[in-house]
Image (tube, rainbow, N blue to C red):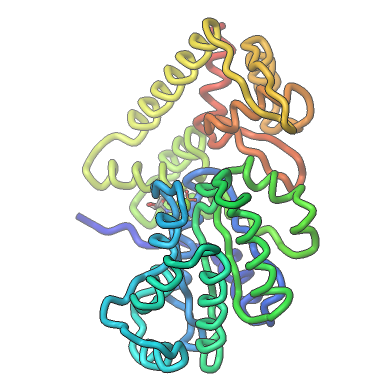
Length: 358
Ligand SMILES: Nc1ncnc2c1ncn2[C@@H]1O[C@H](COP(=O)(O)OP(=O)(O)O)[C@@H](O)[C@H]1O
Ligand SMILES: [Mg+2]
């Protein structure tokens, strides 16, 4: 089977390289709708980075984290052979042949020492800082945490996320020691971050969105799509990379592109109908600024009606319902402009169809 190769992301890659070229001073939040290609873009960039950088990538996606033990196990790559007392010596030996980039390497004896401590976060941050100091003697460390919202609500001795943000600020703004990238698909999380006073002026936001029409066409034509097929795909799926890859595979396997598009839309329509139906029986609750609100079915429908002749709406008004739809991955919120839009072209079409038939 033909492998689908990485496509484009030149603007995003260029922006990140510009950031890496400067002294670390801000935390970079990489955000965008689900399946827009954030993880893929970053992973691809990591592979292409010049020797002068040392990237450490941690993905919290699908990890079940309930306490420090879990978190430390995800964050660190334990080196079973590393019975070392001296971090400088350890780092030097490590950098000689560093291929793997998942997690922050730590010799097992030091890892166990952190575990024994009462205030684990203090020791964990101290180790990472020392480790980065050593790394930075020959390379620029880059810390990348994917899907950080997984630990957004985790309380161990207060919210872990605040301790992490403080540490990230220390690594960037205060010490200029390492670049820090935080990636997330969760736009409610990004919205919280955006309005968080402690992060003000200490971070920047980088949107990795679905491909635009031109990039989409270029991608598809590389796999033999006709102008007509490109038109159909754009109409149904927009530039959502995950959908494009699926459609390319369908075409390479001799299948019909339009049929696949129609099937995907039918599925999305029936999911949305189910959800609306359910809302007729139960009123889910959402938390807003510390208070609980009911999600009203009529308001959800009204939001959908607004999207019949508009592609985006403002986040203001019917906030509980908008928040609910964001949580359900139907809508995406861009905190930079306070606008809400469907997570994908398919979602937009499904919304319109459901409204039309209602
Ligand atoms: N630049 C790209 N070129 C080719 N395929 C891509 C690209 N970006 C994303 N994809 C495809 O889309 C899928 C979803 O992308 P992913 O990076 O996991 O999205 P996100 O992290 O934003 O949720 C990937 O598994 C890959 O198949
Ligand atoms: Mg991802």
